[in-house]
Length: 115
Length: 116
Image: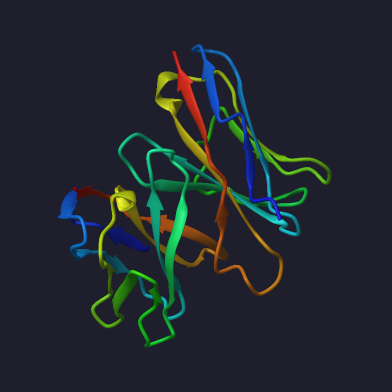
């Protein structure tokens, strides 16, 4: 059973470009979470999605950031018009439906560098 | 609001010795989960150990054990017989229902270095 997959692992963008980060949850998991880790900090919650629904986006910056989890395909975190402060590691986690929401399984992360 | 505090930014330990990493948290909830994650230089988040708040017994996973003090809101990690491969960042994390969503609250981490 493959774990949570994220791609790309490393992404370099120039200021003003768009960044698209992809996350494929573990098989059978229908809940996806995105976290951001700034340098020398812990992970911070951004958004929680289920298929075709955003459940909680209380950690998302109000502008330039969006997320989706379509019926088919991976979850996408999209950052428009990137700035240097967006440079960070972005982690996706997934959890199964039902009662066992107590553990989220993390992907390897995408390291975004904005030049 | 829930908070997680790791007061030791860096620690070091000699190989084969024991080290304890501290973590305190604040919450008004009664049902929640606590975790320790290891993040080696590869940046992968690796689950080390997990504790349910309703269980009084401290969790143990091989060389890793916790001292969970619910009343004091303390959740320390003890690593016995430290190995060079234990060198990593260690994050304490709280998982509880916050505004209807289960989400992690992470501490700022402790950088552990195991010395040969």
